[in-house]
View 1: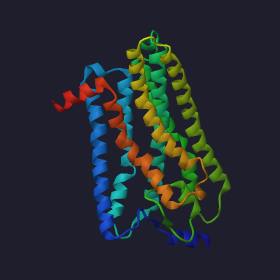
View 2: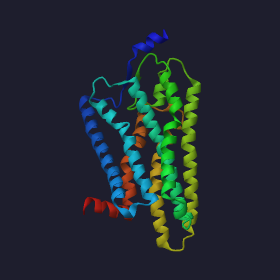
View 3: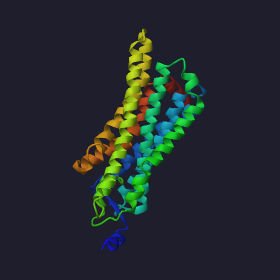
View 4: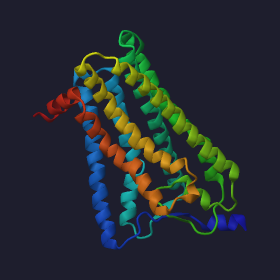
Length: 307
């Protein structure tokens, strides 16, 4: 019986945000606008860093790489979501679903590691200013970036391969706008506690290790900043770290709500809102947070826009 039911399901149906046709078109326009703004915001950070020689420092190179990562992250979900709004069937193929699941999770993992490196960079710059230029060389910066991408793309590889080999029964409806492991595992023919445990353990490790690292870095930064005698110096350090902390708390806060508490307990609506937040809203806000809080970045942006 397993194989026959497996062969009848040719893909999944992603419900997205069920509503009338007019509503779907409105959502399509709204998310298209958000997507374009995200591409423009993050793209302009990349261009500003690329063109302004003054910004060729590890902090800004990391920021430009982070913006590139955000563009990829949004692109792993939004274009498919936009197509889904206009589609009548809302079908996504098996391979499409698992590819999206893989890229979305790998880019999300890369983002967790990235935020940790950016915190490490700020820690070195503020707590070890004399050694900073010798430690944070271009070479180390490149190695860290490459390591993040590699780690991110290997982190969930095995669970995703295992889940994609499982057979799915009954309803093939995923009440979500992307292929998320929670709804996917709920559709498998047999419960797979080992796979569920493995993926939740990997998620927890992925979230908590970088998160504790980031918090540790900032605790040390805060301690160092509070010792700075001048108010101006304190303000400058706070503004650099404040913007980073805002991004960290937005991203981590929403992801933790999602993956650390057991999936089954979330209402589908709640699950969508939280996912929407960290997968689409955060990449949109990031460039704003980073460029508005930063004098050099503002100056480079003005130069880029020719004002």
